[in-house]
Length: 492
Image (cartoon, rainbow, N blue to C red; front, side, top):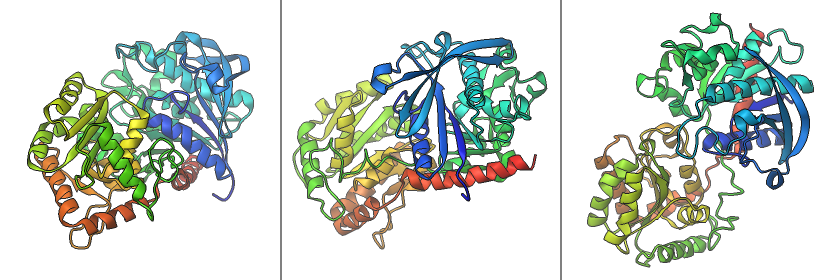
């Protein structure tokens, strides 16, 4: 950029304050990377009941802020905290956010007032910037929850002296979640019935938050180039392919960055032994310790395949479930599995160690230390996702020299280079068909390479560990689409 920018982030979750997935990681880490590049940031999110004042050092910023919605004015408080030099502001409105869950209750039932909660957040984030006289060059919003802010900029604030010149960028983290609700909530949003049409917020008679955001945003991106291509198709566009194709070059993919201060084997304080590309003795010790912890046969010669995942249809764990017994019955290989989710898969994977002692270990639930041990101590890491907008574990695996075995979809395809059996090039093993047979065959390819071409495994590990998927690199890519968004806004 030729000058520093003022950037307003509005997000429904921001790590480390509240997190359910990758959206929070981006909303937490990208502003820090942008600040380090000289830009001025402010981040706005809800103050959920789970956001602890003492733990995060929250302090009162404003006692009262009026936010006009389509049906009248609501009054909220504002808290703030510092996150690595970036100010984070918390919209404090107990009726909407004073509950432990972010999107749903403990029984995973979505809150019925979600369209009101996040419509209000979208307006409140803009109102806060306006009242603070923080005139942003860019308003960066995320997923359906804050997508309406892009529309508010062009309907409520088009001539506003503070917000009128701001360009909007909408980042889509998962196309499957669009915020589709009964049209009875639309008057509350106050976006005008002229915008309740098939080219904006109307979706078969209902309100679609994401669709409206796509229509109004100056630039739209998703979290990998391949996922951007996939979501332009009927299969993975979930009805949004026509809208995205209409955006043309104003819809792009940018790979998420990762925080190497947490996920790098040379500085990881959770693993038994650190290591570097030039000194891999620590990885051998981590593998031995992992085998012992999961009561596997303790042998440096047997390849270990790691799994850290939600047990969900998207993640392809059903494919692995159909292939894993054939793999361990026909190959000299071990599995270490960490995850939770679908009760049937929890029961299945949780029962495998008793049936295959010494060959399969599992931990049902989530444990951050074990996740780090698996990344560090495994030889391979498998992600057979049905679709994967970006993915993070395959990027962590690369840094730890743990070669990914992945289905070539979304960010998995973009971040893993296919093994070249002739030269030993590449950083992992990819397959395309979403079938148990493809999982079985690709694992077999990786295992045979481990035994028959160990020099190729060593070569791939070295290449994998030097890949750079830092947030600094992602921040540069975001600067480019910010510039394009500002140019698009200027042409209006």
